[in-house]
Length: 342
Image 1 (cartoon, one colour):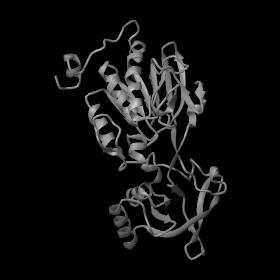
Image 2 (cartoon, rainbow, N blue to C red):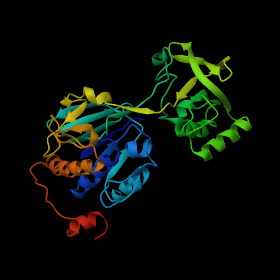
Image 3 (cartoon, rainbow, N blue to C red):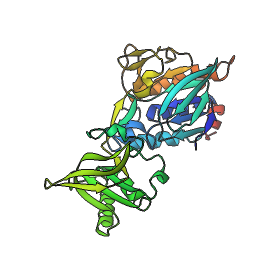
Image 4 (cartoon, rainbow, N blue to C red):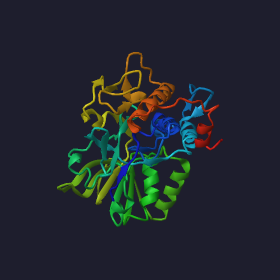
């Protein structure tokens, strides 16, 4: 069921820079709605590099991508924000002199005087299997993510892949779908060992089917899948009946719908000024790896700096006619009260 929300600031992207923007905006009394295509906060750090060590976060000699995400979530806990995950922003349009409407691909609408694009290198887009005619099935019987579990209830489902996403959804959907078949190109999985062990238990118990091979053909009509053809490890071909397919072949970064929002671009990045990190559209800001300006460094700490200056400029859009009061968290009792430490 779609929803409509009004807020002070809409943040597109829930990676480290988007999360820190919540903190800076919160210090100035602004509430935020974050939107991200991924099913969890953290962006690339949490999705692609959760265990990869990071050494250049000030005052933190070493932390992993997931630890950084967890710490940022803890830091913004005192503030008024919401995470809206597993949805992609399709459009951003100006609906009045001081309001923007942001619409996502599941029909949710967000309205605010300020939009902050903190989408890293762009949108995480699924890597598609190299199957002829797959576009005809996409969104009807081939899906690259699970938005609603109920959509798969009672369905004959094939899941393709050997990573965490494929295994997690195999474990989560086997008792929702009427049948689950997991297909992977070899008997070697990259998923967490505990997930692999649980999956093998289900296969041995006959609760799921496990097939080693590669999907070579989709069979159906008008985007409705009825079976797939699989080339097995011994070179033979097999036809497996199914109604839906979830291929998990990883993610890639693309600018995505952002390219169609009418903003000035430079080398597939959004041009901003270096005073406010505002785009060519007043009230829309871009921070982090998605933006471009002379001397830009694609570092998380640079994005944190940009978030701080953006928040000061955003205040005047959210509170017309008022100027933000700059304060230090070390000495301001007002800020300490907001942070719950006063």
